[in-house]
Length: 82
Image (tube, rainbow, N blue to C red):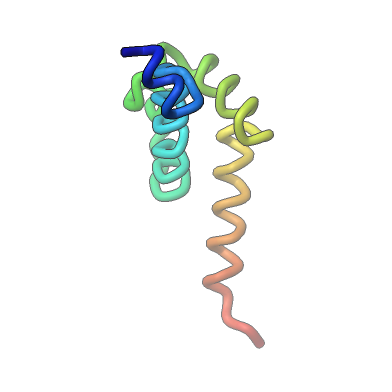
């Protein structure tokens, strides 16, 4: 069954689950002020260190950097054009 999954999805079950978790983390990081450690735990990661390492290797930046960029974009959208 695992072999079929990998053949069909072109990734392991763990990679698939982690990709899903990381995509969900983007929503949580962008739309809430929940601490990164809590985001990691709520998505099933053993600890924030592993979550941050996996996040950085996937997206090229840390969850904290993403949150800062997301906050800046939100602030720029709210400012009226003069």
